[in-house]
Length: 247
Image (cartoon, rainbow, N blue to C red; front, side):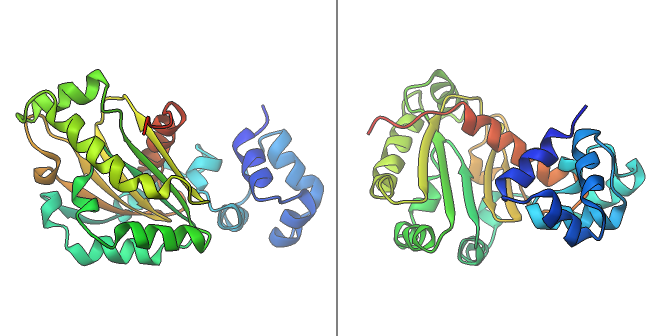
């Protein structure tokens, strides 16, 4: 079976066999076999390719890293654990946004605490204009899932939907900015995900508690790790099933 993940990663980055061969010091035919025959490269070659396409080794070659080594890497991906979202220092959010050079991806229902920052929209616009890809994924205010979460948090059936509409109104000026995509989803939100290049804040959700009172994991992506990649794939799955908002 061909390695479709590796093939797609090279295509996305417009990399051919010759370029990968030159970077890894192997024959182009070897690179071709890595794709068409799903041959697993040596670790030094995996490191080089993963860096070139900005993917993890675990994503490109799921079975290449030994379980004991993978466990060690996964533990190292955790930078910090916060008992509550409100315990995350405010400057962490600002720093992660400012340092982003490639992409910012946010998955929430409303995330009103973000738009409380009056400089956020201006900052996101500037990041997009500098080439950063921004994806904002909010809850569909008309969905059953949003109404259910609102009731579970004890704030009334329609309150969360109203918060989402307020958040969408704040983000609307970004809708026509090149590099910014805004969508809404109707999924059950198990975690809010805030990704800034290769760092991520994951706000886990706890039944009966508002998100601000639930724990947060600060993760940093490492080649060969599974933890960061799991949440990244979760974001992508929700994004793929989402739709443009009704302004």
